[in-house]
Length: 108
Length: 118
Image (cartoon, each protein chain N blue to C red):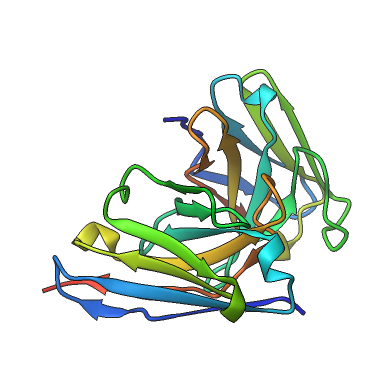
């Protein structure tokens, strides 16, 4: 089955840029969606179809996808961005949806 | 306002069954695909099951295939997850989620906690 690999944690200072990656075989050929999950809350979409940002998500969030790595970039990180972030794809070979293991973003 | 509300969670013994429900409001239920996603305590998200908007297609994660069954009742705007032969590894918060096609999970409930323990 398709596997998505994420670094367990990323730490950045306020105002810096956070880069969260999601690795998978030829993931560049797939649409990647990103979710933010804060403690005790359900996940929320922060980026869909690689770089389509929902209207309620700040422009500081952006996405890219090429080759074997998809990336969620958060510029000008704020304390409120501290959360777990998950990538997700639709594996068309199996019709399964697949989540990455998640990355905990810590704002120092 | 879109709302998904799960119910039916609880503490059950290994080997037993449980059925979760998810009632939707504020959305055109019969135009949406639905999923169940679970999250074990302190762990990441795991996709569990899918049912298409018309109920014609179902898919299951490898860890639950053959034990879990997803269904829907459009007249009640309700999604179900029948879980059989439960084990401790099924202990998790179970979310229902909806998408408008093969895209992101746009809408999520708050989850129903299932604990499998003797």
